[in-house]
Image (cartoon, helix red, strand yellow):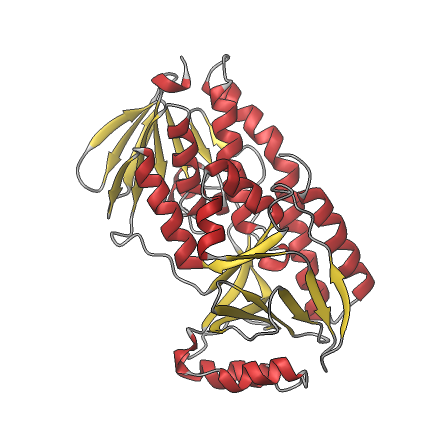
Length: 377
């Protein structure tokens, strides 16, 4: 059976699910995508992206749209709390000599770019719909849906995120997401003239940074230790975020602090992680993205490894002369170590920040991780 003759269901319309739909359609598969949110919305402020993500964008055919609507630049500037730059983290041009080594974009804008490409691919998209149950045999998977339909597929891909219902049904003993003891604040602000690349200020335990997301906007991100995952009243967001910047006298940060207000689209997110041990599949059902390897944002690679999952899965299915189960085994073998590295190294970076720990270890993990991410997938 060739990929062009296969019927594939993707459950979940996030970044990894949309990427899978785009690439599988490019290779000729018949693809259905169901997404529970009838509005196909994506919440959040900005998202920072490394060169490996831009490489994935190029393969998906959305790189030009990203460059037009987001922002790309080389290097990450590291500064002291009072302002002086002390280092610059290099970002290799992984996506090609003509493409900067990193960048950022507003998360809803990236979601719209991917959604447009998914629609253009010819995938059958059903919004406000998800599965209710599935049963499988050696030849396929029968799926029942919330809209009353029942369809049969050669493969089902679970891409429904951190709190995945597919994972719960397929692997009920899988670990649950774990709170990291750290949270991140994000806000969208008018771009300052001096901010033309990602810039971070290295406080003892609180780490602010900014990244341009377009020609006119930038987003602020601030990580802080929070021993318990308590509710934070949105009415307090502005004052709390301003307070986190009180200990930083850097003029740029103080200018940003003064701009913060109710208009700043402030988002607060407790950071959680998840790494599901292999296998990530059973029979003809496979899990990808945050469903099996959700990471904290310290390496700016969570979206990246989910999109890479989609591309590698599509590639292995296309070459899978030995059938779907063999292709899924090859997919997992290629993905496990890279995804484990991102999840575990990101977690360790967070631990060092929470503890106010060894900055040399922090820098060493960052360097080795970025070098590993530059490798082919």
